[in-house]
Each structure stands twice: as structure tokens, then as C-alpha cells.
Image 1 (cartoon, rainbow, N blue to C red):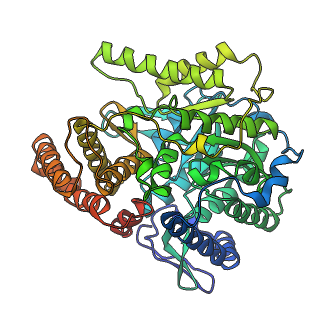
Image 2: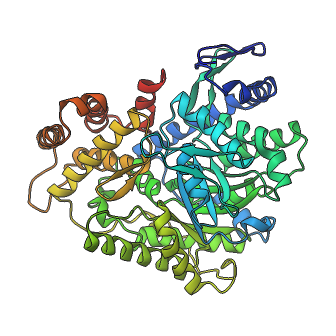
Length: 536
């Protein structure tokens, strides 16, 4: 029924193509639910997004500094906890993440991991078809009716008897879903993803002894957490669900959020199960929110590991606050993936994954992420060696409310190779994103929107502040233009004109150059990029 239309409630307009099966997702009940959420909460969402920009202006001018809020000291000092995790979320020692395409969902659920985070956000390019097909795929998975046959290889995929627990990551509050308008305004992508999955799956999930579990990304403040709490309660009440049915894990992947961990948990305390240390977006946010401060320049991306002090302190604080409140503290993503055709490089990559997950387990995390099924046993072994029980809630490290611990940058060089690497990764990723793929293997690392954000943010930061390379060259506009031109020429030669054109690489270069060269700093690269795929 491609290209057909569906009936809609008053004030609701579906601007996306209605392909086969979409009518089973965009039902009358679903559209009524979405309209109700939008009409009740979208003005507050937009107010909070505006508040981010207003705060950024104060940070840029020096009028405000990031710190632990004095007005919420009583929440941080108080003795309170969140409800225990549901039984199937008590042990989360390894979670696999990936986009919501059909093959990935099957392989991830079959991977042997404890959980699978199906990602509508950074690992997915949010075209209309990707988002809608993702809802169909997840519904089919929940109901045990998902399968897939690869047309190229002829290989068939189906679910095993024992699968990972499904957890869904919705888009961030900043992203609109322009294909669904309510009273002439686009729906929030975050609430679109959340409400559709909840509506179509909560009954079946309950029958199967599990529940509607979500990851919430990109939050910056307790006020944003409070908005999510209100949206969740509205949906639970509208659908006749017991309060607390929805359980959420909040990604702590912005610098401002690191100063409001207790407050974010408190705002969502009826529904919260865990926080996650989203390391890659956190590095991006560190640059973004301190972008006018020349003393906060970071070295090459490869040098900003979880071992550098400001990253280690952030992870330790996530663990300490979570465990004090009875919530799980999830570790981050190791971007390494298996290296085919080179045993030595593959072994080195696997060793790095093992070291990363061992560090997280020993620090007190209750679990962590991997990006490929082959890495599940490695991560599982690392946590098994450290954890006697299903989690480490009893470990509560000592942490201090010292803002400098979270804001002081590490030492390290900025190199010509680091500059070129950032250009290469960002252009390759944007090209893939524009053509519908949001999780992309590049140079034996699984890159998503967060790592592309780091790449472009570092280049902007280095140019604006005139960073000096280890070789003595200054990163200015002329230097970057020369480096971009050189990398683009090499990429064209590697890919060939036909592939370059098919992959929309000229558009990727145009977006990238604007992001890096503009005097202003774009909040998210996905905002200008989304305008280019909104018709897809």
C-alpha cells in the first residue's frame, strides 16, 4: 500500500509516505496519543531548548560557570532511593547497541548480551523510512515474529529462544519529526519514538515477563528530566498502566548533566533504573559548552581516553551517585570492532576491548556496552571476573563536589594526523548518514553521530583558539582549508566518482565545512543534516 493515505484526527497531518505496514503503527489511537503529548508538552520542550541556548550565551560571556547547583543541595544531601530494577534488568553486565534495522535487531538479540539497546538516535539516520520501519521491526521482535533474509547472500535470520532484554533509545529532545505535524508544528522525535513503542508493545512485553524499557539521551538538566517524567506519567495514565511501569536509563552524556546527577535521578525517581556514562557525547559536550574558553582545548581525540582525569572523575561520580540511590551505573561504548583479514590488528583491538571493560568493571560499573556481537564474550568475561553477583550496587566510591575535577582538560598533543583523522571520519560519517546509515565502521572503529560530533567540534575549537600543532603549525582557516582539500582529494581517489556521487559526499563536505568554518557553533550536526534528508 505504498503511497496511500490514512485517516487522521483533527489537527494531525502525516507528511511522510505511508508505506506497507505504516498504517498498523500510525493507528487512530497512536495519532491521538501523539497529539495529546504534543499539545500538552511541546511548548515546555521548546522552552527548555531555548534555555540551553540562553545558558550557553551566559557561559560564553563568563556570566555563568558550570557548577553544582546550590539551590538543590538538599536533594544531593538527602537520603532517598529509586525502586529496585525489574528482575530482567537486575543483571546488565553487557549490553550491545545498534540501529533499529531488522538484521541488526535479530543479531543483537541473539548475541548473548544481557541487553540490547535498539537505537533510534545516534546509531540511526532519522529518515522517515528508518524511523517507521524501526517501529515495525521492534514490534515484530517483541511479538516474536521477526525474521530476515539477506537478498545478496540468501542467508536467513531468526530469533533464538533465549534473547537479550530489549531497551529502546529514543531521539533527543532537540530533534523534530517533521513528517508528523500537530496543529501545524512538527512533533518531537523523542516523544514520537517513545510513545509509539510504548503503545504498541506494553501489553505483549508484560505477557512475556518484561516491560517497556527506554534509554533517554542528551539531557542537560533536572528540568529536562522533569519534562520526561511528566510525559511518561501522561502516557502511563492514558494507556491505563500502573505508575512506574515504564523504566528508564538516562545517558549522562552532557557536561551540564554531570553536575546534576542526583537531581536528574530524583526528577525521574518513579521510573529510573540506571544512568549510563555516555563517553563520546560527553567529550563533545565538554567542548561545546566550554567553546569560548581557550584554556579548555583538548588534544587529539585518540588521547582523550577514560583514563584522563576529567573523564575518570566523571565516570566515578556516575557510579557513586547511582549506587547511593540504588540505581545501576552503566559504563560506556568501546568503539573497537573485529578486524577482518589482519590477525595482529584484530588481536590488538580485542585486547583494547578487554582492557576497557576490565577497567569499567573494576571501577564499579554494573555493566557496559559493545558494538559488535563478537565482543560480547570478551566484555562478559571481564565483568564475570570482577562481579560476584548481578551488579555492584554495594560499591560507592568517594567523590567530591569540586567543579575543577570535571572541567580541567588533560595534557597531550594536537597533531597533523589528528586533524586529518577528524576530517576523514566526519566526512565519511556524514556521507553515510545522508544515505541512511547511522552506525558506520570506519578504520576498524564503529562510528556514530557522537564521534562525528567530536571530530567537527575539535576542529572548530582548534581553529577558533589558534591551537598549535606538535609540529609547530597553527590551526587557522587557511591551514584547515588546505587539510580539508587534501583529505577530500584522497577520499575521491579512494572511492571513485560514481561512489562519491551516490554517497552524497559533496553534500557531506559542504555541511562539514560550514560546521567547522562558521564563527557560530551549531548545537548538533544532525540539525543541518536532517534538513537534507527530511524528504527521504
